[in-house]
Length: 342
Image (cartoon, rainbow, N blue to C red; front, side):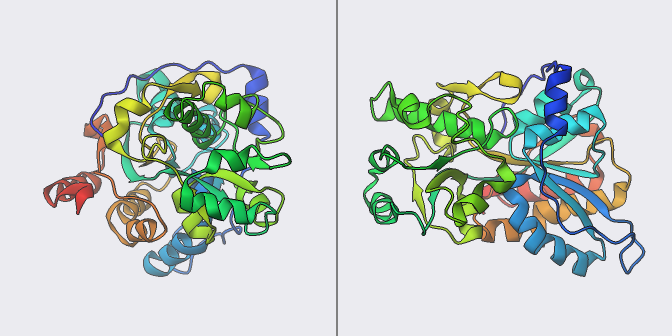
């Protein structure tokens, strides 16, 4: 990812901040006051879609290998970034589901240097994941084979889930996918037919609970990342590359549509990229740097790929002079080995 992004101010009113403070963020088991090696827990905020892999695999594995426990907390990336910006949360590491969250809320002098830099971590694509318990299960399975998914989503009584675009990039991406689908299938009214209003209360749920609602049969299907379907072992409908936000070769096509993002600000479509950073709220710099290395090139990164994420070139953005030397070394080594194409 080589395009230069321009940071912009996002002004949030008191009512918005109150809403953010009320967001229910998923949280793993309470960490002990210190790990067996004497290290303090490392505070990591991460996109809610990563809850399963972080709590079930990466967190425990990192504790065993590095002797450092992760005090992890998940939520919508936009909401978490605003909590960092407002001082509500002070993490050592932040993993976002969208570079625009870093650019528009945390990065650089225009955002009070809450973050000096970030690195691209992994790629993904949007899919429609569905419940094996759904009464539309047979139709959804057939749609996964034939690609005739729009017809099923419009069935009377079909329960479709997505997340809030103000708080979570995945919610914005669901809107972008449908805008692209409307053009791809030449159906101008498709977005409203499938989604209703932007914040349709019958469809919009917190990111941390969306898939649990699906697995318990409260929803028939939901917009999700491919890695979530892999992690949860759920069936899904793959979408055409022209609309799934997962193929960089279609970046220009994705950019032709826009949808409301954080704070209601319009956001253009772009290939999906997750990022990782050490915000300036860090209390354990050495441990945070080591964990970022683990996620970019170590066992943490291999676990992401195993769980359905895609590889991406490691690109450092922001003030590169502030990037810790070990992370600069990882990025340089990755580039020399062929980057995300290996």
